[in-house]
Image (tube, rainbow over all chains, first blue to last red; front, side):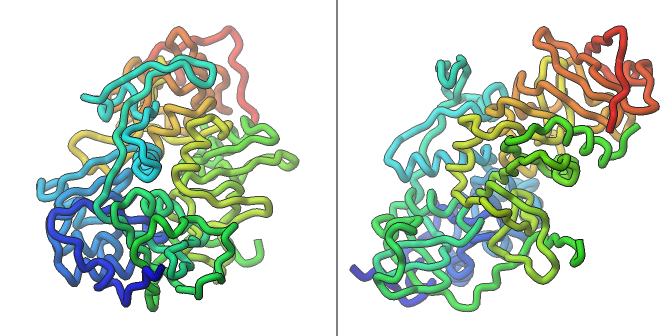
Length: 237
Length: 218
């Protein structure tokens, strides 16, 4: 089975206006740089983007925001982005802020074929408004939980370190973050990888995302992998 | 009166050998610098690390290795990497023993507000709502009063809540306080050079003061 496509343009060819897409990454770590560039070039509009963060002004999802291609962001934290703030305050951009664990688990539920989950995060706060609350005795205590629905993005886009033509993926360090969950949740999942290796080279025991979840894969060139907060220790500490 | 390093040093003494600990952004991050020798703890970062180490030596930064504050970090021997769902799984299931985080307000019944100021840009709650709703032990590191001199230890929070009835211990520049189950702050320790009256003055919520309030050792 060969899922390899030529490049990002081919991989995202049928992402159209007003679709819901999910994108991997935490801050700028592990974001699908090449597909984001291709979406900017294609100029699709009205996107709903499910992604933990919204990039910075000139990189990551910030590039889609600059061109007003995003109608709604679904994220847990959206700091570090002036254009985002402007669009949000002016009402041009709809924003759905949800707890990070809830975001991860709603994606997981989508990928695992479950319609909803119960979580204690946000009970008694404004994010619980209008949601079903149910008490469970669990882990030795009775507590309230919120019902939260699974995400079912039309397209999921992730970036991995290595992949093969069967779509198997291996992520590197904390660039993994949301990507395995997002890869599983998509109706169509696109993976861009730093290195596309020959079949048989990846150790089956070490695969993070099995190929069944990945529909298209390509090798990206010249990754920038920008660092958002460069923090270092002194040399002789 | 403690500075932020003093608050971090006092909180570090709450950490016991063998604990898995999640540190929030700001003062909580500083706690890692003051963990006493001989105490073996594993730091969890909710973007997917157990066994997080210090910042990398200049020139060895890796864009693929960051903490939840998006800062470049390192891994210690015995560390592991996992996805975000598993990360919040270990938080929700209380495998993580202790969470240390900052707050804008805490109420006398243990409610916490730390994610949103109405009318100001809302950046989001990140993992804070999951952490406070799930953690067995939460210590709040905060200033006792805000920049206008108003108490941040209140009868009821005025800001939108992050979690309800979840905070049990607070360390400020003036005091260590415990939240009692019936709904009041118990003054457990005072900072060097701070009087009980000063703490009373700076605490808007109900404050229970024992006959003897020991001065904290930091």
